[in-house]
Structures are given as structure tokens and as C-alpha cells.
Length: 186
Image (cartoon, rainbow, N blue to C red):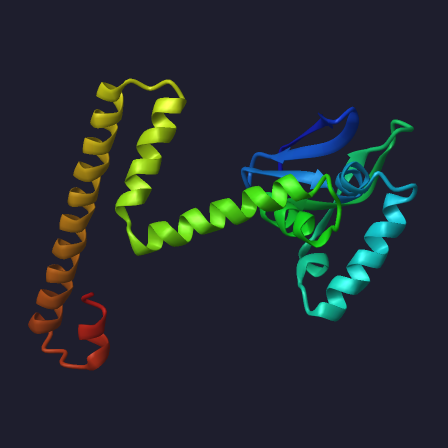
């Protein structure tokens, strides 16, 4: 597993991070994140108490967090509780802090938008178009991208249909009328 240690700065506080090339995920030091959000004197103690509280509530967050070696202030590498992005967002929701409030508001907004998109999938397309434009892509590039996605979907649908037809033909040829043979044609 190839990893890259980096430090992110948030409000003049360091948050140790680690990029895992294999899983293509960022991992963040939980203690560093808690220190930034709570500005408390002992973030390790805060995390210990929070883990206990989360376990009592039935949350799997503390159980699912990993430990990875990260460089500490003394330059040595120690195992540190880390969270991926999804776990980090869940952690932020559990911390009552004015500094965490902007993240919580943003998460609520994103969740609301996704629920709206589930009701009206066209909103998803509109959001994608806006994000491509904000990233600086031209309308011509965006149109070509959408067409290539559509063509790729049509092609994979054709492949699935052909595969199902072949399975069905094999089943008929071998006179297998079992339900297993026909359920695999989908």
C-alpha cells in the first residue's frame, strides 16, 4: 500500500493526513481534527469520551476507524486513529462546536439537494453541468463529455443484452430448463 503523508493547515492548526494510493482515499488524524474543531486542552481525552458515547448510542464510527502510522511532533511515527472522508463528516456531526457548525450546515444542504435529485433526476444533470462550468470546462467539451457517456451506456447495454441472449441460447441448446439457467440470463 503506497501512502503519502501530508499536513493540512486549518485555522493555523495542523491536521495530519495520509493519501492511500491503493484505496484512493484520504485519511485524516481524528485527534488533530478534534483539536481544530473544539480548541480544547486535551483532544485525545475528548476523542476517548466521544468514542464511548458513540458506542453507547450504537454508532459504528469508532469501531470502523482505522489506525495508521503518522508522524508526530517529535518526528517519530506512531499509530494514530484516522478517519476517511465519510467517517470524518460523521465525526464532525457528533461534535458540538461553533467551528463544526458550517460543516454541519453544508452537509445538511448537500443531503437536501441529493433528496431533491432523487425526486427529480434532471436536477442531477443540471448540477453536473454547473460544476463542469465552474471547473472551467467549455460548453463544447461538456456536450462532448455527455455524448460520450451516453454512447458508452448504450454500448454496455448492448453487451449485456448480447450476453443474456448467449446464455439463453446455451441453456436451450443444452436443454437445461432449470430455473438457475434462466435466472442467469438477466
